[in-house]
Image (cartoon, rainbow, N blue to C red; front, side, top):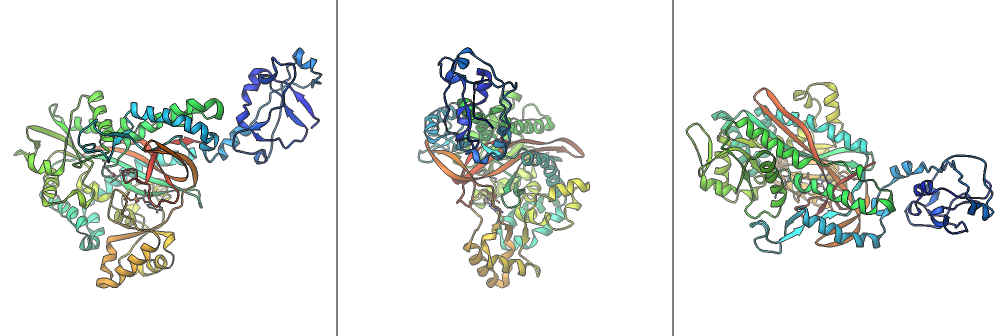
Length: 576
Ligand code: ADP
Ligand code: HGS
C-alpha cells in the first residue's frame, strides 16, 4: 500500500479512537491522520497509539475503505488526495471484542483507581451492601455496620451463546426438581446409604418420611433455585457445578451489580468502546419477589404473611431485604423474619394445620437458613422444621425439594438412564445431560476404580459431602487423605457420605476486585449462576422460568467461589 497521509472528517475520526489501537501498524508506510488533531492545525499529525491491549500483530486482516474529505488545509499541507471514496471501517472491532478476555485490560490501573470511589459510592447509595463482620449487631440490626458487598469493578466477558444456553436450561432444571421431588422412593433409596453415615441427611430424610406418612397438607410447590455453572477452559463447555434448591442467595445484590456495571461502563465507554448494553438486565430480584407473591396468592388469604426463616446473625440481610421490600412495594405483601428457634418458641398449628407465628397467619415459608447442620444447634430447630413441614403453609423449599437438591441426587441423576425417569423429550434430556460433568458415587463395587483414580490423581477431582453453603468440599491431597482414611474405616461405609466430581477449570481472566474499600488487579475465574423460579398447584404449573443470574468471580488460585464465605466477589457478565 503506497505511503499516504489520509485526512478524515470528524465523524469518521470518532470511529477511530486512539485507545483502540496500540503499537504501530504492520503496514510500514500507512499512516492515519485525524482531523481531531488536525482540523484546526495546519499540519496533519501522526497518531501514536499508546493504550489498548491488543498489539496490531493480533490483526490477521485489516480492510480499509477510506472516505477522503479534502479540506483546503490538508490540500495546503500538500497531501495527495486519493481518488477513491469510502469509510475507514475497522471491522476488527467485532472480532477484536470476541477475542477480548478482560475488560480490565481496556481500563489502565490509574483509571481504575480513579473510578473505585465512584463505584463504592454507587454501591453504598444503591443497597449493594452487607453487614460488616467487624461491627457488633451488623447482622442483627438493619442499617448498623454496613460495608459495600465485594464486587468486580467491571463485568466479565462471557460468551453470549453459553449464557443463553444456561438460561434455556433453567425451566428444565425447575421441572426436573419438581418431578424428582414427587418420587419419595427415589429420594429415600438414593440416600439410603448416605443417611447411615451422615446424621444431617438422616434427619432431613426422617422429616420427609414422617410427613409423607402423615400426608402432605399443602399441594403447592414453590421453587427458587440457582443452578451454578463453570465454562470449562479445556472443552469450552458449560458444566453444572451444582443446583441449589434451598436458600439460593444473591438474587438481590446480584441484580444491583449489573446496574453498577452499567454505571461504570458509562464512565469509560468513550475511551474503551465498551457498551453497557452488553451487560444483560438482571431481573433476579424481581423474579424471586414475583414467585413469592404468586405463591402467596395461591394461599388465598389476604391477611397472611410471608415468613422468611433466617440465621440469628445475618450479614447478608440486605440481599434478603431486597426481596422483602420488592414484595411489599410491588405486591403489598408483608414479610416477617424469624429464626428456627424463634419459630420453635412462637409457632403453632391451627386445627386445620395452618401455621401461625404468634397471631400472624403464614402463607409462605421462605428458608434462608436450614441447609447446614450448624443451623440446627439443638433439637428445637429440628422441631421447628418439622412443624413447618407438617403445616399447610407453602414451603420454599419443601423437604422433598430440599432433598432433590442434594449432591448425591445430582450424582444419581447423571447416571445413564436416570434422567429419562423424570424428564420428557429426548431433546430436553440431552440438553440437560450435556451440562453434566463427571460425577461418581463411592458406595458399591463399581466405585473402586474411580476411588483409585482419585487417590492417584486428586487434582482432577473434587470430593463433596452432602453439605451446602460453601467451604465443605475437599481438593488436592486432602482428597487422597480422606479417601484412604474412609476406605480403611468400617469397611468403607463412610464413603457413602460423599460424591466425587470431575474438577472443572474455568476460563481464566483478569479483574479489578473491590473488597473492603480496596481494589486489586487479579488473575480470576468465574462461576455463572442462573436463578430458576417454579410454582405448581397440584397438576397446574403456574410459573416455570429463568429468573436472572449471578456471576461470582474468585481469584484463580482459590478453590471456592462463595461470596458469603469470603472467597468470591459479586460480578456480572459482559456478553460477547
Ligand atoms: P456448596 O453447596 O458448598 O456451595 P458447591 O458444589 O457449589 O458446594 O462447591 C462450592 C464451590 O467449590 C463452588 O462455588 C466452586 O468454586 C468450587 N467447585 C465445586 N465443584 C467444583 C468442580 N467440579 N470443579 C471446580 N470447582 C468446583
Ligand atoms: C443467605 N446467609 C448460596 N446459600 O447461595 N451460596 C455465596 O444469604 O441467606 O455466598 O457465594 C445465607 C447458598 C452462594 C452464595 C447464605 C446455597 C447461602 O449460602 C445462604 S445453600
